[in-house]
Length: 236
Image 1 (cartoon, helix red, strand yellow):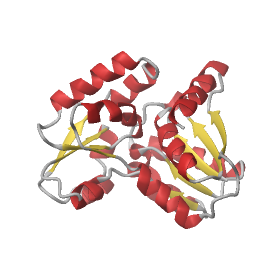
Image 2 (spheres, one colour):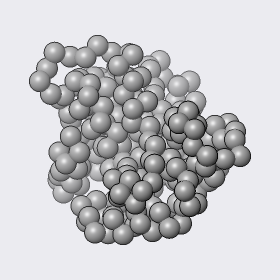
Image 3 (tube, rainbow, N blue to C red):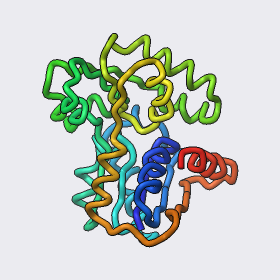
């Protein structure tokens, strides 16, 4: 079984992409009580991430995907030292954008990602521009199925981001805006395909018609779990 972890809805988009193209058993764990991660300090994020990884292992996960850029940036080295299991992170897809010969690359991300040492090592070229979005993940959580609000916010992002820049979605929640940003004429890069390829390298695909997916949350209200399942169904 493959475990996925995020603060809330963002990682659902990533897991759905993997489950669609790589049949396996998946367990998703969300920690909405700790959200948003982007404005927390490093020690807080390390504690939250370690708890999530430990929980997923206790439920039988053979590998864990940290489907959160901020948790990856601030805590992946910490949890890799704690647990003897394969832990895959989510990092801004800067390299694919560079390989595509993009002249200007704007990375949309939280303060926790942009301020991390891990991100600074990725950001090596002057063509890469940071676009800090401190409240954007929370906006997605509050407007998951409100298409008009998501579309308007995406067009606002398009206006704020440097003109003619390719956009790298440096937070999995921002996948909610991807189709609208493409409609606005932007080239958009995310980490989904990279994570999918890593899973294919680690595991054999199961001979099943479709992936088996379980969703759990740190605080298990029926309403919240229903929303997460609805989002999953809409993205598969």
